[in-house]
Image 1 (spheres, rainbow, N blue to C red):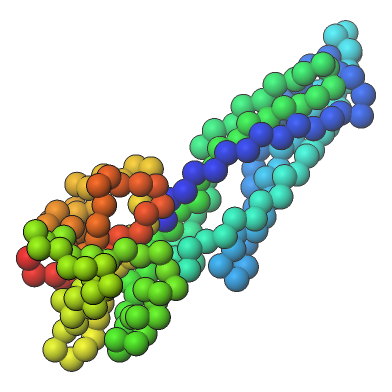
Image 2: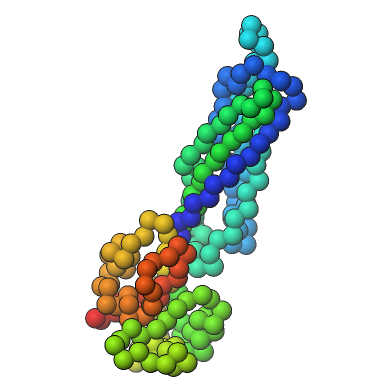
Length: 206
């Protein structure tokens, strides 16, 4: 998982001011039931008049509440602010623009029986098809793929990868040590799309 979020907020000062003399942003968060909850804290100080030497403090809080993907390893979740800009408008409005990234490693999903695999495929947006030249009918695609990925002891291991903005076919193949033919064997797509989920078997023999 590697998702980028942007937000724009406006805050009103209790009085008109001359200038913002310092400003910073920090954050705090917790993981609560697969959701990242916390606050972005914008703080600093300002001068009311041009000739004033006194400074007044200010602080504004922005709540954040972002759901995480179900297969994310919560111990690996990281939150980073990648961009922060601001503008003072009409001498009493603070406009801020913030970009932040939430990232984390995806867990390996294991299924010890075919019904559990079926349930996962039915409840998640995962496309599984066989891209051979003789493509099977739509209602048989899932059945054929399940047969392909079953091992002798009926134990199945594979990754479900969610496509991010920085992904490419080459980077995904390198990450999971598979080739393009293997990737296309289990997924159907013309082009990669953001948040598309790809089924990638572990230790697949090409």
